[in-house]
Each structure stands twice: as C-alpha cells, then as structure tokens.
Length: 212
Image (cartoon, rainbow, N blue to C red):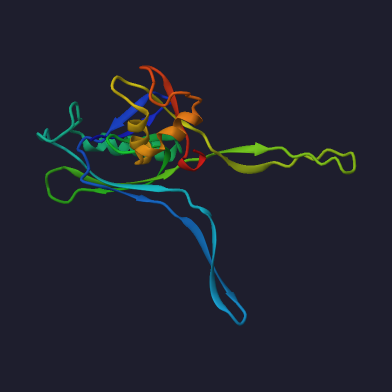
C-alpha cells in the first residue's frame, strides 16, 4: 500500500516515505438545529459537506528497512514540499493504493515535530476534497430583457481509470466504490454494451457513486 500526493500541473509526485499505519476519512452532511414553537428542537438536513482525509505519518531521518524504495532521509524536504503546496493552494490528487481513495484535494493543515531524539519527524496532514466552481448563466425572457446571473455551483467531474491487464469492470467497481455489483451501472455510464468485455488501455470514467 502506498500513500501518494500528485501535482498534475507540475507532474510532481510525493510518495509518503513510510506507509502510515492508518488514515481517517470524514464524510457527512450539514445539520442545522432549529427550535420550533410548541415542538422544540428539530434537525434540518442540508447537503453534503466536503469530505476530508487525515493521515498521521512518519518522515524518517534514517534509511530504515521499512522505508519505501527511494525514500529520502531528509524529513524536512517533505515538510517543505507539503507547506509549499499548502501555501500555494495547489490542487493535488490524493491516492491510497489498494483502496477506493483517489480524489482531488487541497492541503488544509500540516502539523509536525520531533519527539524521540532520532531526528525522525512525525506529521499529521489534513486534506480537504476539492470541487471546482463554475459559473451558471440563466435567462429571463418575461420582459424581453436578458439577465445573466453568475451562481457558484459544484461541477461534478468524473475521474478516469485506464484498463490494465487482468482488469474487469466488477473489479474496477470494487476498487473505486467498494461494491462490485455496480459494474453494470458503470458500464451503462460509459456506454459499454457488453459489461463483460473491456480492453487494455480503455479509459473508464469513474463518476461519483450517486451519478450511476
């Protein structure tokens, strides 16, 4: 398993030098509590909040046997890169191999320090899923006048996956959604007539689960 941050614009890749022991994903909706006369408090459910990812990691100062191949042993080279991405508000792609996690993100926070005298740095990196905003134009013709209203909306963009040797749609559905039974819907979304036949190099669109 590898934890990877990738800057597509600069083709710059950061592989966490030591595989973190775990990670946390926060996913939810906005709940507002409203007090109604004679009824009391009630919960009004809104729309989804932006998911976040929290990773506790070790940045080694020595060449340990459990380091990833080609891992640097200058822990502060990693913190400098993470801070630079954070300060520049760079849109990154966060991938955890062997899991469905493959998401555009921005770095929200990085906290780090030393604690055991070895020179190793321990960091907590918080990532927030990124959604691109686009302008929506509306027209009103009731009076013959045209009105343009710019409204920020979340543009849902599909991720993509390139088929490799041995892949099946059910395996791809399991990889990205954790549910292999979604493969017929994934085939339909991609205009694939026979869900059992895909070819190496074929690009599969991976939409949000709710769009299937």
